Image (cartoon, one colour):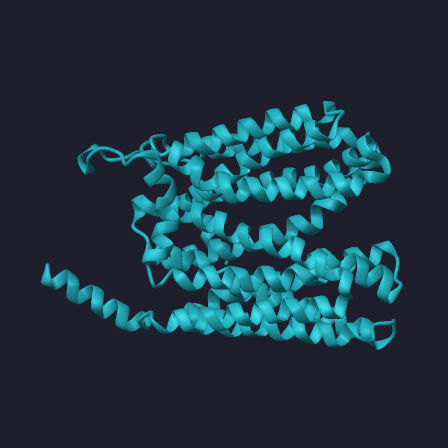
Length: 421
């Protein structure tokens, strides 16, 4: 997998992603502490508002910013987004009211919703070979998983020698490092610029809708919409309720919460390490559809385990389920970039990745509060309900994919179309 890092351009872009993720992880910890400083016992309400603002920015801003910045080179877009994130990170320590935090977080996450899809659209152009691109997707997944483990540990170490607000300085340094690395990468200066020979640029509204419309038009992209919902429904049980399951149902201490989340991340990392080799032999649907079905089944099994979770062997069972859910989650999500790349012309990649960013987070925006509300009826009931939603979405993905030609037939059809022209 590390062979892809021989590309100097990709190596610098990947390093930019890593340092940016470290900054984001530090910000997550710092925002929780800032919410407590500002709201005290009502910090949970402020944090809930922060997460809601984050998802709203992710869902609505990504396609709008892609449409607004279509005339700019993608390097400029990424560096500009990082500069905005640096400024906001430096402003956050001075926020003294919840509304100020919400506003700053919205701007910060809007910049992230601009940076991430643009970054994702550059990688398949930098790495035209499909095997290299698959390795890059897996490395990206590993980076996200490692960030969720490493950043809290780094934050804990830094808090031993500095005040909590100083963590935002680390966040700003991470984003500044990302901007410097993007600037140092030898990207074509025109990457992202519209070709004047293609005629005038479409109106803003048409550009904003183009990525989502592209998903709706392409049969090969429609299953992704359902698979996003499978992941969100199943994994929201883990992300929303691990703390309740571990602390209240099983009765373990706070450190066990981190252990269970790390186990889930380890499952995701395992899939990311294995997938590049597997995808050389089989197509994406052979991996993604069984993984989607497994996510639904594992969530239902978690519901069964939660009916009697009270310590003892149930700890091992739940740990195994958390690991397998992480494994299946990564198997569903990691290959999506390959499909988008194959189904999308190079000049529409930015809009397509912005649409995927927006649509996938729309699923999380639905499932996060749904999982929280269902928790009032009991954790096993929550798991069964989310498993039902994941099952329905997995069935829909299977039905949608039946209308898509097998990859081998698709290549024959394209070759025939080329010869006919």
